[in-house]
Image (tube, rainbow, N blue to C red; front, side):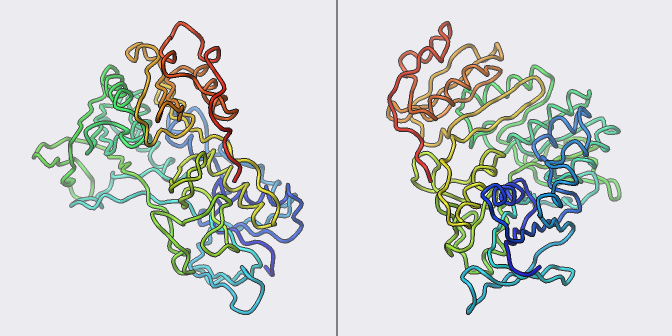
Length: 422
């Protein structure tokens, strides 16, 4: 490759950035380099539909095999970029990159969409066979195969991924235990009422949930795991362990380039790094709050990857950036479908619509009477109403939001500013 754009990371964000460049009229060379041997694919179904057997790996592909050649995108698979250097005398933002196998790429523009890797649990026995992580397509294929023969499954981590996988395992008839170090489930993302709902809901489905419980180590029979040792000395017999204790943004290349990193690659509202000629997008980044422009947040979602990559493409071409949309996210845990719109961080009030034990309810979040977000469980109409409100500068007064007998969309009133453009 000579010149053009080099996109490091064939992720959802990486592919979207390449697609957006073409949609914006870019005719220069585009090279998309990915470490995996597979073309870019959807990751959310890995812990849901794929594990249950409802879908196969081929159906996860984000584009048809012919798309890349037709769009003039050079997709390089199975190559890990290990070195990147920016030119000190040529065009700003240009440089060279090298891979582990020795390939070299020359670029005029650089984008980092390198994603994040699973946080490792560093305890004795963590290298035993049967202890798995779930981040990529190969992880999911291996886990699905192991689930078929396992009878007892321990999930370490009560976040979204862990609970999704636990729901799948329980649906397959496995004996399932979830071990969470915090005092409630999904504690970084939802209010205590939602955490408690999920604890009770999983208990109703005969999944054991242990809170405020740390893992001290794993025991094996030869090379394979047979037990999980808890900090209080309890032993949980198991055939299979899934660890889902969060992810770490991949910042190694950015750090070597001298870019600012702080729990991720720091970017501005236009996806520009501390070197404005280099952009980054997706799970590897921290960015200004997309609705207020204040502070820094890290968002792990398809919606953010697509939106941020679209903005990054515009920044590389020097064209106006599209308006950023309201963040949204979903988590399907068996028949429990959670949809989130907005960001609830910093809320000082929440209002519950409906009865959580009915498994159909919503929680609206406010700060100083301003609507911030919604968590909607099996309540798609509530979710869509709040997403619309946050997008178009409306709100639902907290004083009436709890009236479950009135459709939420009929309670919308104009109140707040429209989501700012980047």
